[in-house]
Length: 160
Image 1 (spheres, rainbow, N blue to C red):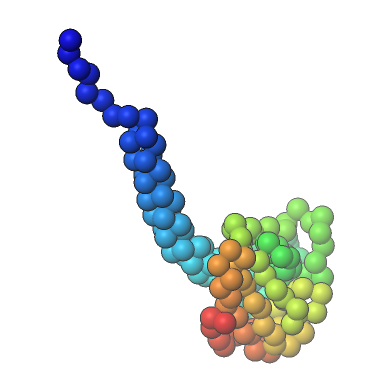
Image 2 (image 1 turned 60 degrees about the vertical axis):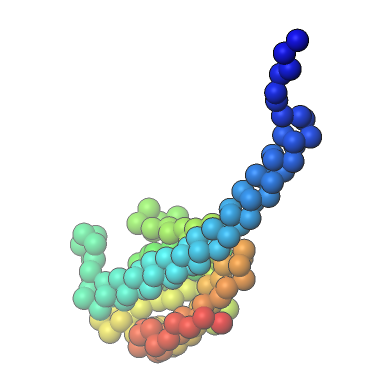
């Protein structure tokens, strides 16, 4: 009689356990850079949108509406923000452009009144003076602070 050579169930379970442990360790170590890149990417997009809204206010861009130049602003919410034009945020305006920050990224905008950053038509200065934004990754706890002066210029972006 020939004997069949094979692995026992115990040996298979041990190998599968080791593989599961290795997979979980490698996956968790790869997620850290992804979350950090996500925060940096969100910050870069937000800074670009701030500069774009300020520039539109400064040059008097009417976006084809055929009216006189207007203020431009950003309405800040926890997980996203909305680009708008005018002296106030009209929630139902079809010209509003919402921007999602990405998974696990949030804005704390307590330094801006009513969570709005509005740039004055012609000058591009902030209607409410300077302020700061804190953008954080809720998974890693990493935070970055963006500081704007009264002229709408970003003077500082630092990690907290």
